[in-house]
Length: 113
Length: 112
Image (cartoon, rainbow over all chains, first blue to last red; front, side, top):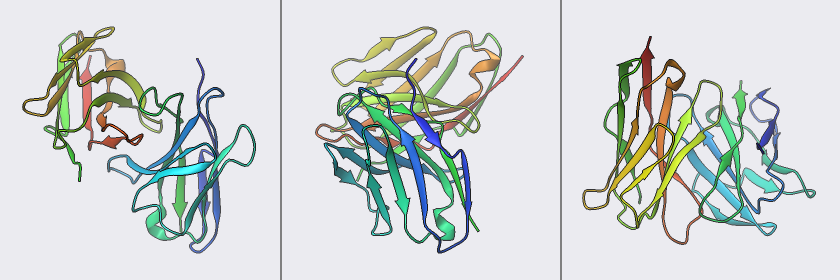
């Protein structure tokens, strides 16, 4: 069964450092998403991406965040200057159409120290 | 804005019992609803979905019921197994939006 692949599975970084979280969406999917889940809390939407541009973003997705599809397979989330409160599980998801069939990756656990 | 809530944070059942997990939502414009299962250290795994033009949908051992009048969604798991132990989230989307709003999650604990 096709799956969304995320790397690394766990990233530890110092406060103020930049991190890039990587995702390989399902190959025929056109819509890409990042969500995050702070420990013990619900999954929160960050951003959606379609046709090489951001289509929607939440208020969490401020200027320190950016997304990119650098080639035909990868989808990345960059956090420019990490803060302690950025510690969370970050999930990438993709879908073939806009409003159904979301498939989530296994996540990257980001720990900011 | 939208909010999604769950009635019970933890549900403990015996193996073989039927489980019911509930979810309330506030945005009456929501038209697409999904139940996800999340095991420890993993991402949300799709279980079943339903659109607002339906009130019931069945899958393998699972049934989703949608009551739009009271804005309530439930997931029924028949003959619950230890492997069903996980956190279950409801999520919803509204027309014109590709984003999902998730509930807080209910932990299902199945005892053998």
